[in-house]
Length: 123
View 1 (cartoon, helix red, strand yellow):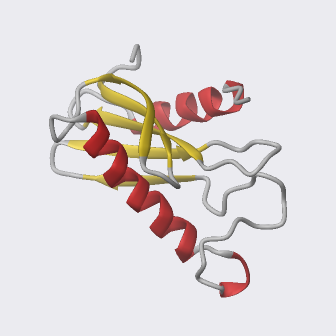
View 2 (tube, rainbow, N blue to C red):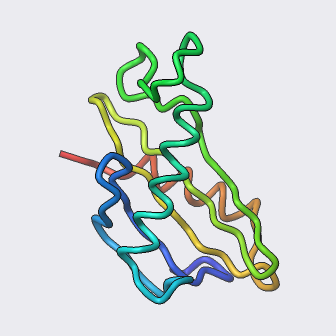
């Protein structure tokens, strides 16, 4: 949350839609609802880029490698950056950052979110 313009952040399991952790505000006033809605976006991205065009959202053969690196949704007042977390096991976790459009830096947010995703240890 020390990132300029950061309004809210979540660690979400995209299979269940549950927030594993959250900080800051929620654009809809409820962290669990935000997590569930962003999980739907993550699943849609996985289906869009599923291997061999199966459309089933299955992960590619590389262990833990999601089909999409990150997802950016822009609104009139902000950005939602979803960064998939790569692991050595079948991960279904992503980071979601809500960034204020007028005070945030989208490029910096992507870099920092990527660094955080690489350092995140799940076990």
